[in-house]
Image 1 (cartoon, rainbow, N blue to C red):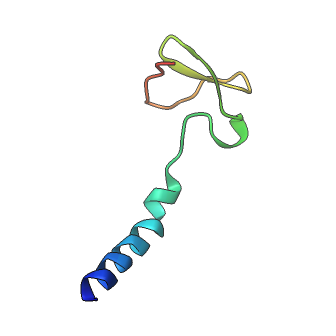
Image 2 (image 1 turned 90 degrees about the vertical axis):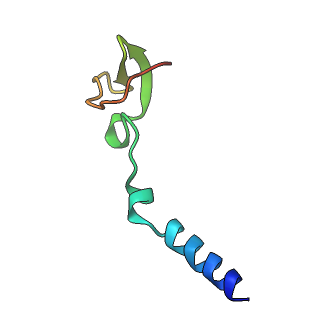
Length: 58
């Protein structure tokens, strides 16, 4: 019973974690999402290039 409660509590902490909720993807928000890749950079649907440090491999 105690193990079950500990696991339940740990799962609740992970689900409510602000780090999990704050994770952002390239071109998120007003940029409209990813349109395509160009030279390893993400090009957003609004036409701008993402400033993300991630490398685009699409």
